[in-house]
Image (spheres, rainbow, N blue to C red):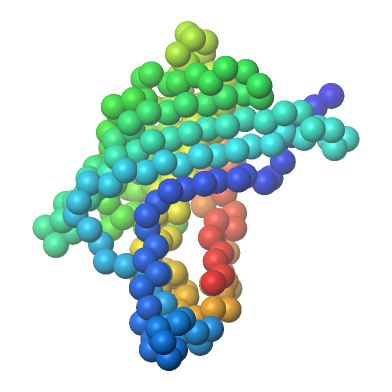
Length: 225
């Protein structure tokens, strides 16, 4: 029986990206009101930041039978660059762990300490760099990975490891103002919804395990207060 990945990903990103500072006038006595305005963007800091992102995947067979699940956990350290000086942000993986079903949690030793630079201004509207890499992340870095038990990751699991990094960058990019019209900076009051009219179709390069003709479509993050 074939097993498919159910298109439901439960991602917990402890991003520290949203500042619920009130911009409107508070009600009498200091209480908040439903008509108050909020600032979900906050000010950019140059201090080193630490993040945890978790992805929980539930596997379901074609007949609807649960087939267990997988968990992926990424710890990142980010050293923000000074954009006024044209500096990129430096991302460093502080650890990556994964678990299949009820099996033991294992780590990916070769990813710990791996660093890469990320500069949003060097990407086009589809978030591709000059080499056509999504968010500038080289998928070849995730080919042939082995876990802490010495087992080589299956291609689908290696892809999920890669995609956790992509997911983090998509969340953090979305949380910054001005990366596209109708961004998070436009969510000001309770009931506001970010729902762009366009759809994105990106030529995707997931590595040598998958050949040609791969596109990512509908890559918009929708939010509502």
